[in-house]
Image 1 (cartoon, one colour):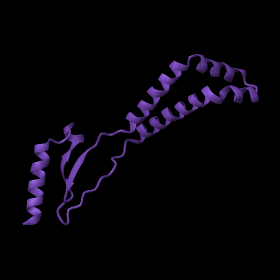
Image 2: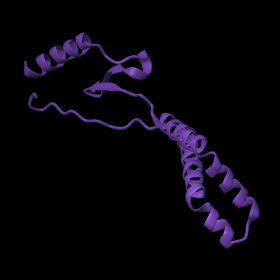
Image 3: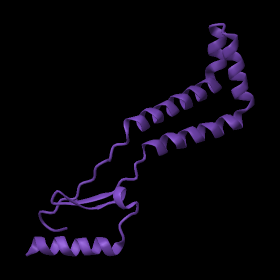
Image 4: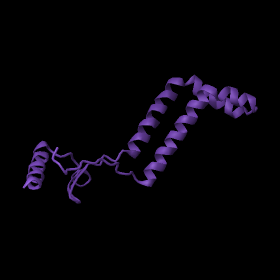
Length: 122
């Protein structure tokens, strides 16, 4: 790497709405898993019959419960994935996946490297 050249990675933040929806998905997921495994004893202790019915439903439909858990987990991950990729050189954005909708080609990366590395050495 050229002396004086700095490569820095940052996380592009998702929208606050997507973060909130992702957190809701995860709360539902963890609650559902907890109810499946410890809900019956919990609801027996507090004498809550409706909770027992929910736990029995989750246990008898265990495969559907786990499929729903995987779907919720995938949704939560996709909500916070921005897919952003930007190349900034000297405070100038020279490539943005958010604007182009694609990743840079190897030719573009090669051209950028030649242009900016050559200009830095001369």
